Length: 447
Image (tube, rainbow, N blue to C red; front, side, top):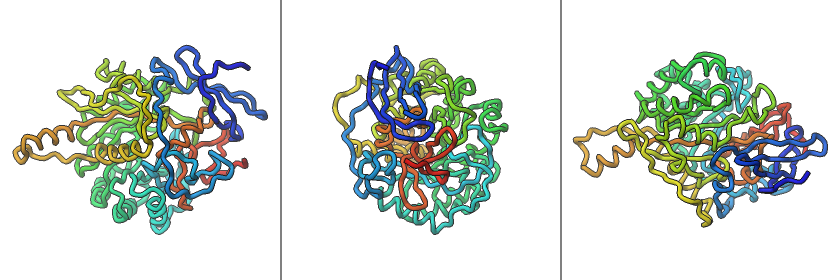
C-alpha cells in the first residue's frame, strides 16, 4: 500500500506489543496512523482531527539528557524503560502508586483498580521510591495515585514523608469520595503538607457519572471541593472525555470550575485512552483528539476561550497536550497566553521541564486570600492575579493502537516502580487487547 507519508514513526502492535514501523498521514483535516504487524495485520487509527492541523502544532525541541540513567540501552525503546539514556526529557511529575485498592468500579480505569486484596506498600518501601526519584530526577513534583490513594488511612504519613524529603509539591489523584465524607481526613492531609488534589470530575450531572463510574457522584464531588476550600487545598478538575457520554459537558465543567475559584485552580481534560479497563477495542468514533477538545472548549464557552489562547507544551512532546492560562475578570476568562505562528526556533527540553514544574507547583496549589487592607497597591495586584488565575489544559495519553514512540521518549510524567525505576506514564499503563502489560505487575510480554 502506498501512503501519502506525513511522518514516519515507530509504534507497537496492539495484539503482541512488537515494535512496528508506522506512518502518520493526512486525509483532509484528519491525521491517521497506519501500521502493519506480520502476524496480526493492519491497524489504522485516528491520532489528530480538527481545524488545528497537526503539522502546524508541532514544536521543535533540543533534547534533554538524563544525568543518571537507571537502565542500560539493550533492546531499544520501549523495552529499556527505567529511565534509559535514550530518553529525551527529565521528570516533571513522578507518580507513586500507593495502593491497588479502589472504592469504585469505573468502566474506564488506567490502573484496572478494584477492591483488591493486595497489601499496600509499607512506608519503608515508599521512602525507597521517594529517595530513588530524588537520586534520578531531583525534587520534581509528586502525584500519589493508585487505585484510590484515600483508601489508605496512613496517606497523611506518606505525604509528610515526601515533604520531609524535600518535595515541595505533593498532589493526590482521587475520586474525592473520602475527601467528601471524612472532613477530619482532609484536615490531616493538609497538616501533613498536601498541596493539591487531582479530582476525577466528568461532568455536573449524575447521568454522566452513572455511565462512566457506575453511580451518582456529583454531590460528593461538590462536598470534596468544599472541604478542600475549608482547609486550603488546591483542586484541579480532571474530566475523562468520552464520545457520546460527556463531550457536551466540557463548557459546563469549565463554568463550574470558574465558580469554585480560588479553590479550583483549573480543568485538565483527558481524552479517553484505551488501556487498563476498557469496554471494547476502540473505533475512530470512540476517540476524541486534542484539537477536537480545544474546539469544543471554544464552542461551548461561546468563544470566551479562543483557539489562539491555547498552546503546545514546552515540556512534553507537542502532540501530547495543550495548555492555556487565564485570569477570571467579572466572570470571564481573559487569556494570559496567546499563541502566535509556530516558531522554527528550537527550544531546550530541559528548560521546558523546569518551567512546567514551577507552573504546576505555583498555579495548582491553593492561594490563601489576604485582607486587602493589609496589602500595598502592588501586592493587591499580585494577590488578585494569584486568586483569579485559572488554567485549561489537556493531555492525550497513548494506548497500543495510537502509541508513537517519539512521544514516549519525550515523556515527562514518570511512574515510580517498587524497584526504583521511572517508567513513562503511557508505557507503564499500555496493554494489549487482551490486557497484557509490559511494565505493570500484570503478565509481562516477551519481546
